[in-house]
Image (cartoon, rainbow, N blue to C red; front, side):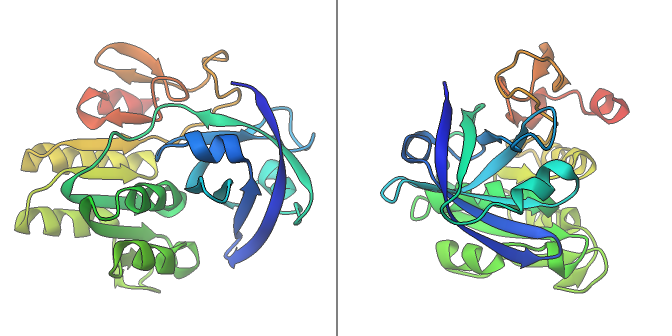
Length: 257
């Protein structure tokens, strides 16, 4: 895997500090799998590069789409990128989701929503997804229309403050859905959310696969700064993950980390 000099196709502000960045990177687009990410250069704004999940990959067009939220100097530097500019990226990094078939739940929370779009889009026509999206506010419920287009129906929405959909947490929706119909669960979001998702999957006796979020400075497993506790010992989110079988994660230890 080598660093790629890529070209910005477009950058769109989604609101709430969220941006959608589309980049021409044919080799990355052709190889990318749902759940994988790229290391994106901040152009010197930070010491380390930033990992960003791949929200969409169009092999025919040779483009990948990244959705991120401005939270610091690195992501602020990304927001300055404009069409025609060059960016350096490494990827696709990590292990993605295995192929999905049949009925399944795709659960996204906050900035964990974008990689779930790639998963749903990649398996359109093969899997029947119930998409559940949650965020703190309406502004952070990104890509809702895109999910509707690729899945053929609107996702179920819930927000902490009730500004869109129901008021509450996305895990509440998942619990209700699993009580009605058990099916495998695929999820990405903050650790507290994923901990609850894993517990619900265990309770309902269904497979569960999670895409973990972590700060991955190198993206290739060298720095060891993104390790998480598993039944096999400490493993790297950037190499052994970011997608894990939820049953393999030591959730109690992860929550204490």
